[in-house]
Image (cartoon, rainbow, N blue to C red):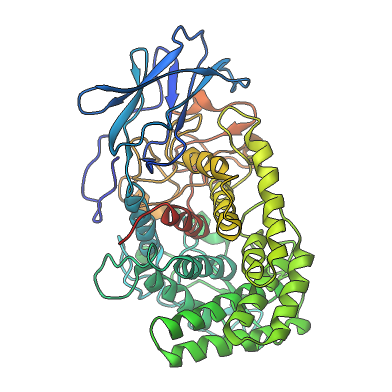
Length: 545
């Protein structure tokens, strides 16, 4: 496994991994497996495969450690009609291996208890790259120190300090909703397992994940404009139209307006973030000043839910269509922080109204609320179970076991499925969805048609040209960025951009497309929320002592 170095100064050969003249392809998780994991791969071709078995060999000397039969799949993929799977769960010894079919070898992978630790470390570095303002960013200088130059919807002539936070994706817009969700996921991860998520790579006696969450917390408090108003967005779509530039060289630095808005959806996630932060800052740091500050903000904002619109309608991106899940999450976190039963009653009411969403995205996080409520009212785990049943059914109907419909942001939804399987396992102690969990995890890491890990710097073949401004000025290199992943081909019809790198075109079909190209903001752009979901997933599979 090749992991991008901290300073990104190691030059990795830009090798074309995706094509092969013989047209036989082996797809496997390129990072590796825990010893007890389900372990499997896929072999496919556009011509008949004459081999009926496979080997697992040691990378060092090609010594065969496992021999098994290929299993013919009932499913094909695109132009490839000869498709097989193979299972090597029985290989449990630590080491580096390859899968072999005939004279073809897979990329190397590892087996061991700590194979996912470097993945988590890399994912965490991505947030440092995304930092905006005077927040000690990585790979760029301080930037956008005049945010926001005006506030639309409040007083257009009024400059207001909303410096800091994170750039949302590959460009430089900042969004309240995705920043709040990202901050919550970082806090939630630490609360879920403060050993696995308590790593302190910068050796300053503060868990790295809480340091990063503080970047989000500080910015969200700045966005708390008044009792009934947030700064919901900083900068507009012009950000996407001024060309490639480093953030400190942004020609729009002194023309970055803020846009106001508020809805029950935003109040819900804001209250959840602040209430959870208050508990952590009190329990971990014994810092009552910050804990009280966070809790006061949560209580105040939640108190005005009946005075605002259901859903924020500010023009822009990330349009939502429901608020129940986020409001339920805010209510249950306030109950956990205060013990006041009115909040619990609200959480139950809103949680039932949220129902099962059969998805995971920035607008669909009902399972987080249902998980938290289940700690008090166990029946709420049934909502998560309904999701998993649906996902599991889809998983069994395709060659690569994807449990989702391809949309925009596939990798985020994919990791959300794994997250929900983890949450249900924590609640019920059930292993019924372990295969779902592993197959979706492995899809992200290379067990997919393109044979690519969708995390930059992770695995052997990974995105070399993400749609990311800072990466563009670093020869495409950026640590731990989870790109959007394959999307339904119909989405691309609505946009016009040139694809210069078609290395993976062979594996696109009429239904789905992925391009490792910097112009492709649909399938090759990372987001902070996608990364925050992934850091929970891979942190769960990590081992820290």
